Image 1: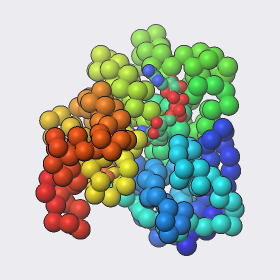
Image 2 (image 1 turned 180 degrees about the vertical axis):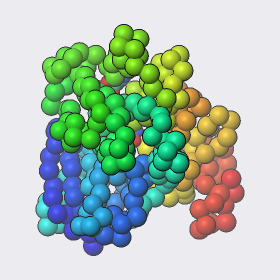
Image 3 (image 1 turned 60 degrees about the horizontal axis):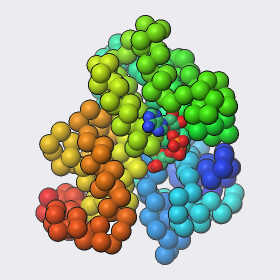
Image 4 (image 1 turned 90 degrees about the vertical axis):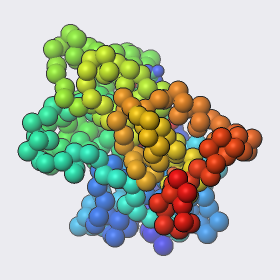
Length: 296
Ligand code: NAD
Ligand code: FES
């Protein structure tokens, strides 16, 4: 069992939990995710890691209530425990694997949308710990939904906050801020990392393509079981079939067809849609899962 050391409501339907998971904390890196299960019969929920403390053996997760399983999770309190807390899974962010001197030469822009701010935080923190001052944009629907602002301010080079309704700092979408920074303020970026709702990542990528800024996105939202078995997160990345939970969740955003991915995500939600995908794609699970012989 994995004890919850802190349970905090950050905003409407959004919760933060510190979980005692020393083995996960010891090995996890920015970009990776965990799978949590509230009890024996609970659904497996893949969640990107928000923070970790290797010394204390704590992993921090942030989640939004989107269905029965996350609702059940939100009812857990400090002192309760998760049945399962498996990880770290997926691939770490690209910069973690790159040569540090090369990473230091690049100017990074992080774009965090809504709950996507949680997985952006450990990446910016990693940059800060390695002496790199990254620019960060946080976008939220309104003031109450701006997450982790103080935490992000402490590790970002510059932090820009924007709200859709203008209730805090400035009015507009994250794309308005990207445009403003590059076109009006003369900022130059070598890499953009955009994490948030699919529609946000789609429009950030459309803009950064025009601005010629290579962009990484996290396809965490299309994951279901997070193990390579269900086939839900199958993606066409520049003509190659990839699975977000095994090969990602981070990919080159300019190679992703977001309209196709969002359509597939909708289809996967219904039994009829899943049957249709099976007819079109065959058994869609990941061939290298090691459990089933695989098919590709
Ligand atoms: P939201 O709908 O409040 O959007 C956040 C911000 O994204 C907005 O404030 C806006 O600035 C920007 N945005 C939205 N639509 C846009 C558009 N058309 N053009 C430009 N910018 C746009 O976000 P939310 O409700 O917190 O999002 C929840 C979603 O985030 C869920 O679907 C969840 O799956 C996803 N999520 C993604 C990740 C990931 O790893 N990519 C992680 C956690 C959550
Ligand atoms: Fe099921 Fe990736 S989430 S195969």
